[in-house]
Image 1 (cartoon, rainbow, N blue to C red):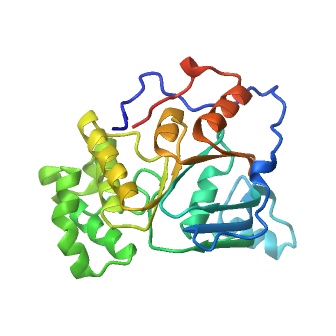
Image 2 (cartoon, rainbow, N blue to C red):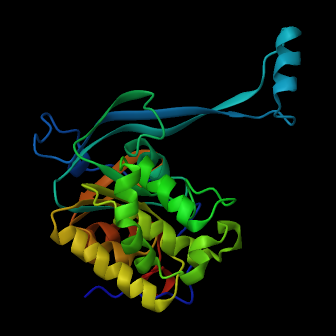
Length: 291
């Protein structure tokens, strides 16, 4: 059984500003031939976006500057740079890295939310995502209505969602709150319903990005058992977390991402140890568990 208790001293890992940049090793060399049986294929993925630097980031300001022949100030951000790897079928791949490494951008690209600037992503199966607390929910609607929206967004029919509703509601264990607007929910209640919707869609590929830190101990235990059951059913999982113990417990392999580039890939403990060494921290300084 995987232990997913909360850490009292949880804080996101940050590198020493004076540390040398990590150097990619041969474990992250782009594969010459991608695995035909892989659940996810990522090939030379680049994602670049522009950040508006204007003090007044409005449509009016954009139009006025355009009419005057003035340029709007943008900054180009290269979030991912030439990322290539396969996610094996029926395995859990953990993604680690400091804030700003590109982990969430990568997950959103795999989920189909962000289009590649260059390269390709091939998904072989039905994807269910848990990207962040409340993403995709309308807080003005009730929990019941959001379950319907989430299920239909995952590809189920209205009838299919209704058939699964009791299972989802029982797992979330919200009681009468299931029929109340989600703006009245605590962060833990939000997280429980989001997780319940994501995992009960029977996904082939489950993507989880730092979304399970809320919830009481009893729910965290149920969440751990559910994730184990998904993996036992040959489900494929992509897991992003700063909680390195959780990453090591759940992952079959781990990928270290830094400033949009792959640095290392391999055995969970070996990669996590290399990452901690880069950050120059010990076990007593990191988040070991976040569920």
